[in-house]
Length: 133
Image (cartoon, rainbow, N blue to C red; front, side):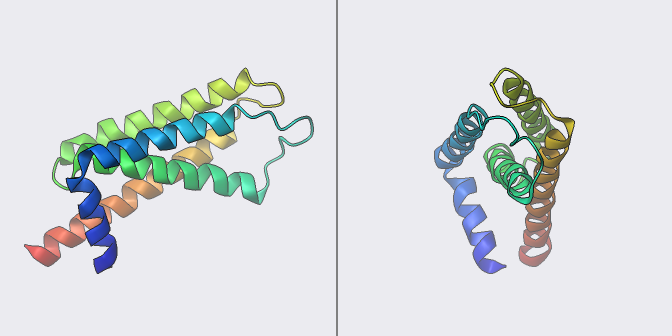
């Protein structure tokens, strides 16, 4: 747990780097969503589920780190809203990509990743507050 806390603290202090990683994550999500996988591949499978949860987890985690920085708790709601709006825009974007579709189940998987990022970042903040104060 100590290494995780140290790593998070590093990214909280390196604001430009944490913003860069969040933006790079958004670009990567957009690029992958722009790929056409052809007919018959829109079925939900384990790889697709993991993609949605993990990519939005990491994207949201760095959005949280960038905006909250361990002590700006009032930014949890805006960071969550930013992540959710990006998840919605990702699904809308896929509607216009041949072979892709706008899917509510994918959005729910995205929000699962966002929620997990929120949960883990919140726990690390609470852990630091109780452990080091």
